[in-house]
Image (cartoon, rainbow over all chains, first blue to last red; front, side, top):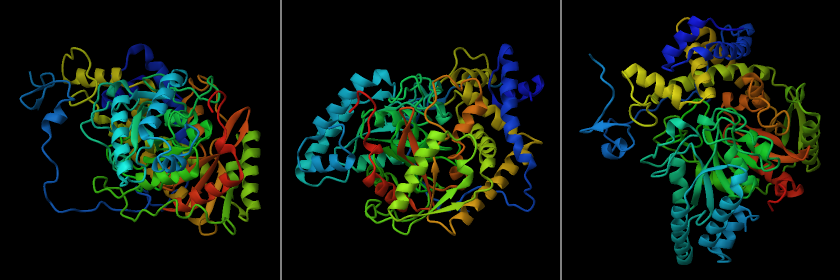
Length: 95
Length: 484
């Protein structure tokens, strides 16, 4: 099983991963073999089975709406590629 | 000193047979001399370690030392360490120095442990051979042409080579148990929610769980005592008292009902591995345990279900690595899209990119129900198999992996062949159950692991059975050539 070239290009865009032309057919083939594996699931009868998202059916707990985080902007921004005046700098977004 | 267990090291430190500084220097020297052959450690924190050891010696002298005071350990490079690079085995985080400690790291600090450094791992914990690390593959100390398993292969190899008496690790589909088995050490993945995931870099959040590795079950119990805790900062952590896992180690296994799943002894299992595992079961039977054949009929579905769920969650978790706030950013991005796409293409390795693409596919419009929804339903079926089995047995045992360590590079071209390496370990992650691996034999001069699966929060019983097994066998004391 292999995936259409256009599908790989769409996935790469959705995933924000640049894929180079030469590797598309190899990527398509490898993804295809993984999808073939996971397609075994389609044969299973799961009528009426509830989807499981947490092993112990735990729910998200609530807490008081209080500020618990300290302001550590400088420490957190020390690892950023580029900052200015306490802001993260990225390439120009709006022309 | 490197052949002593953690339990023995604690006694030796407390009775002043040796100091933590001596012990720490000894292990730092071993890392410097031996690790070039294994590549198990990415970062050595010698200076901090010796400082921490000196502080530990003061506390030991003052007589107010906590449990693991002065004991050197290694952390898998997935746990954030304040001021020390945490790479997750990726170029993406090669320059990342966290400004905080993971809860697990904090717990060990509170217990007085000394951190020698950070261990190598498959990139973002995705792999079963430790060949996907940006820092190069890890070699198995038992046979350097073979893999140590993954993703916690650095931790396993380091413990096997006596570079540290214990190490932290994580397990999403077998990443503690499989490398423990392949390197001949003991390791336990606790119940989902037992150990805090805060500050542990996320792969698949509904499956990830941290746990310890050491040479003996007793040492795993000592480390788990420290590692397990309730943590407000991890919303999936379960608020439940942590027992003293060492308190029940000496209980007898007489009358213990051990379920042996027939699906774990079917085709694909190496005959030598089967023989070693059967012999281990016979040993426990001779000690008074009762073996009961059971069936986990949906076992075969665990690999396909996992390879939908884990990549789907990974694709969401890894979206945070976009070159904006931390981690790798490509050179001269021409616009925002270019920065995202090239930073991720250049920063992530091949296997990580493959899983992000698969996960994105399974979650994309039109496929969500057929893949992710379906896999979560199958997950429920797999859990039900275990729930039914545990109505009748106390523990489940079988092989940890289908065969001993394979040659490096031998499964590189075929992702599916690599994925089948975790066929016996994945189901417990899907069900959220605790799983353990201990050494139980040798095949082709390489170690074999016995897997022990427990009911929810039944880690004490698993450690007890493992400890009793280690009282009558010596597989856990064997060392690779040139190590002991």
